[in-house]
Length: 166
Image (cartoon, rainbow, N blue to C red; front, top):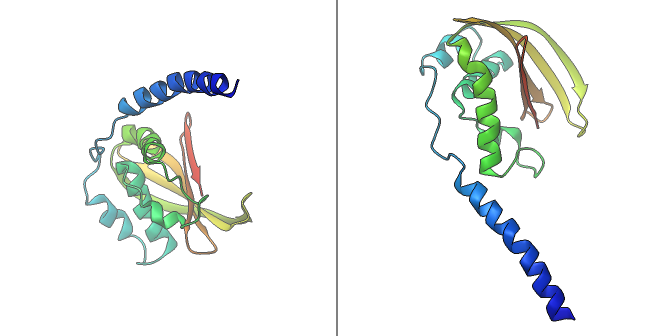
């Protein structure tokens, strides 16, 4: 009876394994081509004092535009950032896809900030900016947690929104 049961389980798991391997082989793993020049970060960051939250927010806007997130800035805990590289790539590309049609950012104006405690218990302050691009404006929120880690980003247009929170 046990041998039959083990055989049934193996027969059920084999198709799932094949599907998982097939899906993984179809994932794009090549790096994303930057849609903005490397001069954007200094352009936006020059508006703000080095080391300030706004300076860091400008850095993260550039990271979202180019899909090159520094996942270590979200902290080292198991729930702070996804460990799966396929999931990370998907998150990076979702942010990039929303920003791509806007072109190169030209300005970033601080609007307001709000402090709160996240559902996970992180003390967090969210800084909201109005970002001007070649082809329009959007709202961008960059959050910093009380421990100094990046808390997350929100990119919002009239039609779409992207969010990632630690």
